[in-house]
Length: 202
Image (cartoon, rainbow, N blue to C red; front, side, top):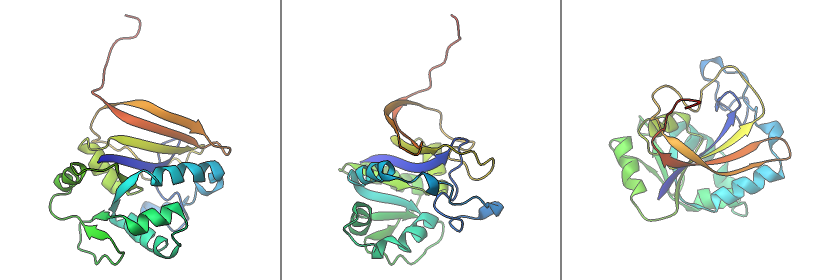
């Protein structure tokens, strides 16, 4: 399976608390819900398409808790709910939580090795949504094949960033791009190898 990361991010790279004020107040973050004004039908179609390509989910503990508080009772007529409720969900956590959502399984042992084993299995996509701390680990170990970035036209100035220090260097190819009616940039980047360097003008 290809490992894909789909996440909402601001122009200045913040991914913290896009969905609501109470989603993630770590470090005194007070601007949660910044994505909401940009959600429209174009956004919905893009997300539905993403969820039609998944065979399994990989989630951090916080994202699992947020998802399990809503999607199990959302009704499977929604493509997102149908996928989340029916497909395997692998949860990375430093603790040993009780996972009550049907199909959820706690990753055991070393997270990086466990993810490599999941990627070796047949299938389409192993999808990561949100899960900021987990994404940092995946990026540092060069495990991400595709990034789908939904970039909102807003600058926050502080908060958790998508790419922190320690990310493995790499180049990507822009495999898809569009803009929604509200100004969200929908960008798909595919892993393309090592970083190439040069000197301008030579």
